[in-house]
Length: 165
Image (cartoon, rainbow, N blue to C red; front, side):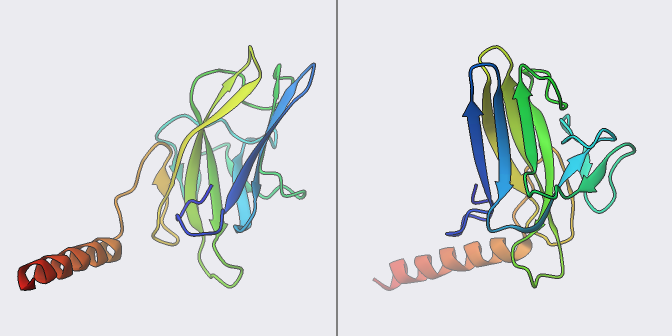
């Protein structure tokens, strides 16, 4: 997943299907200091829509780096974990784009786990491009003012060139 649409994918999504079970993972690739929202049982939280993701989380949730750098794992039939429904759920993530970055970025990945045929689908993802600023699961943040300014300037330049031609 290239969350900021540059050349480097911040996360990779993998699925392994075996005879008795299926597992899915999201691994950080170019994202650094990546963490996922977990519940008290230390499993990745299967969040509903509109859960706030930011420096502070609602009660019972915490930011937790997995020591083997696997942020998300589910099993089907679900013998462990929190993804025991085929409804859309969100995985809360935070990371840095570069190791030297002082600020974290917050985002989510929408997934659907089909327990019957052991298939995990990534439905979408989003993040807040304002470093250190949170968002709600399922929310697609508005582009930053700087991005809108750059987009508007590009349009004005194109209009001027068209008029000059």
